[in-house]
Image 1 (cartoon, rainbow, N blue to C red):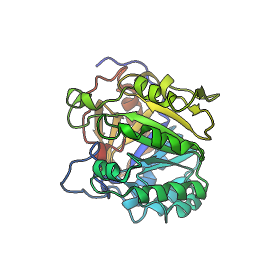
Image 2 (image 1 turned 180 degrees about the horizontal axis):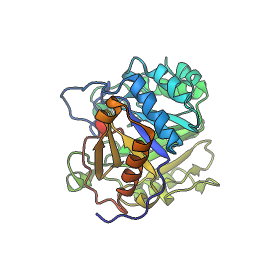
Image 3 (image 1 turned 90 degrees about the vertical axis):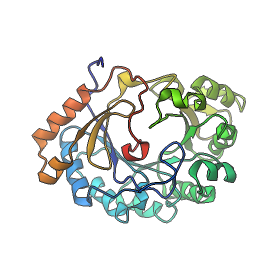
Image 4 (image 1 turned 180 degrees about the vertical axis):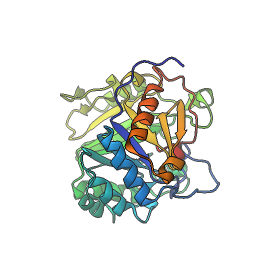
Length: 317
């Protein structure tokens, strides 16, 4: 696969577990083993210390659902204490967040991304295979009350499933300073052709958002046009679209991922993995990790081909 010179890797998505308390249809199979928390708290902290020494500036803790780990608050505290780390965030479905929001904030977490598939209880249960939206909304409110900034809400859209939720979820930005991002469906485990009928393109999403009011670009926002922050007239928060199909941003991607089982992944969609677990267990050092990070950055494709290799709940998003 052709590659272009990639930005120096500055951003690490760190999956601390493949377990989750939900089984969202776009993320994991309906049944099967949950898996184990492969990396220990100490191994996670050691890896991040080395990664930051190698130039990583931003870390996002992901899962599965990271809040199912009993030691998630100590993990966050360890990472927040890493010298040189400039930004620490966490992605969650928020159903377990209400009692943990303030302890996580006090431990050093600064931002949260909340996956929210619907506001209609029946649709939420359908997409999550049994979850309760009231729990997610309690987590969202707790995040705002705890002072996280920004609080982002990510909505994976599936045509005919939850695309009717666009107006209601965009309405969350009316009173609260949340950043809602609608995400084009990515068919991991099935291939692009198998899931193409579910994709709601960015242009269509933006058209539906314009029906709610005039959209004004926020000053200073960057990235692909659809993903840039837009404010609906009269709203406090912002909306946008993450469009891996219709507006891919591979050329500007400086993200690498460490999966829940210790694999360094170059590209979310195309894969390119190196098993680091043995090295982590044997005593990974800085020169070795510097080389591995550089190799992973060089392996990032100039443009993804829509292969969607792997399972989302093991990759970490």
